[in-house]
Length: 637
Image 1 (cartoon, rainbow, N blue to C red):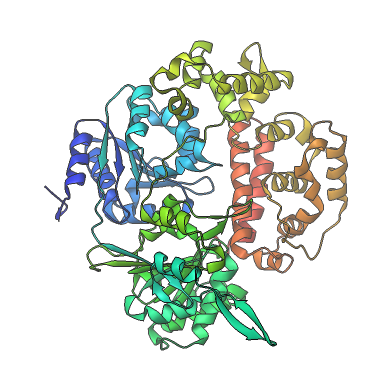
Image 2: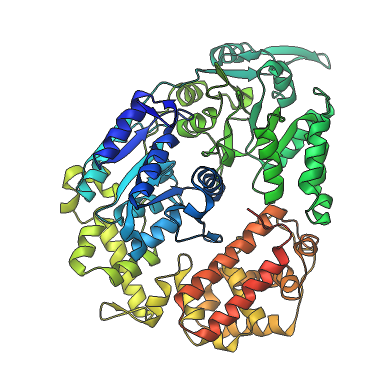
């Protein structure tokens, strides 16, 4: 079978046949094997029929990339983008959005979804994510009965179980399509500072042979030093371009500079000219950013770095140069492994350990194969290469062997009930329907199998506990949402805190500066290493602190304890300063600062949608305009 001039693999043909039969489909196939082509088939067929298609992605970077790709293929007028902080052409027949946005539309029973025939869930294995996994479950549970789903993932060991869950709750056929063969064979190796490129077995054998040296007259055991990223690159210069994954932003930049100083590669005038053209119309202050100065040092030698702390134009610069084949080594963080369509010939791991927000741990097999799968470019490379650097001090042979041999980690439910979910269940469904919905999650199915609908588990008790609290606080009365409840049903984080401020008379004693401060407090995620060099005490700030302190509920929240620090971000915005002025007052990276203000803007967008008070809408719009003015020099897609 051919599609758009391409001869399809059997798994692609099978998936298309299922789609033509109006079935949902779960596709488990290696990275780079052509899963997105199946989604493209759905889009191509449905827009001809006048139907609409939604393509969801787990991260905004992937949403942005898919928006650009589909805009090129189908024209900008036919493609829309919704990522919370960005809304483009929302009435388009092809809508690209983050999974959160789709979940919010589905749970609220948005009429827009009446015209949707297919929803594509890219990277469906994100259902495993401890913090966000429930978003995918709710997206599936609350999808309309007529909607069919295409679920894409690199590997799902328990794909049949997952498909059976969807089949049992949605009452339509769900086909599983598995494809195990990579189009580009992958060679997986390891790197040791003494043995060089080798096998895990060889490193383990060498570990068992201790080395001793005479130090100050005594024989003492010597430990092999940690491997060097620069040394590894020297050994694979015939296997570039390379993605070099490290789990630290600072280390991405540090390693890029270290490699540049070795002058392994010649300077390329084409890169220098491209950088000059790319930045010609950009704000001159961008060139003075520390990260940009570092990037301009390394890029001419075909060495780059890419992480979430960079602003959009810097990410674009790196991505475009890589796409042109001018980058030899790109040091990058884990997010670059998620669906971004820029494979390299080689993938390197600076470490097999990562910090997960709580402690350091080994990667799991799904994480390893997700990243390793970026190696090998279909239609360009005959084979791909993977090298994992091993520090013998961290060597756990059995575990590393298990992780790197096969992806054996099944997807597991991370279901949890949010306040928003409870509010929308009460608003949209009868008690009987709620009882039915509460047992439809993947957790209950995995625990009880086909008898899932006969069991009342902890989720029922959680629902009733949250409902009781909402009733006590005035969000629910006599089983119905009150004004506060209706407001907070359209808020997707800190629902009660936001409701207590903006769905009551509380906000009426605030001015725009104080509203900006409070919403910034809600969006801010404090980190120990973040520094604010100056605070901006003012009457407005002291007044809002006093007002919060008088509120019996708000005063208990830790969110508002950072108000003085946050004034270092908010005060300059309120007084018309640019992001470059704000950056001088904090250790936050420019990308993090931009993301923070985008999140603040998204909170404001939710408040505008939730309220009927025109005065509040005007004040919120004014706050958004202040943010947009401050960010305008760097906030581009």
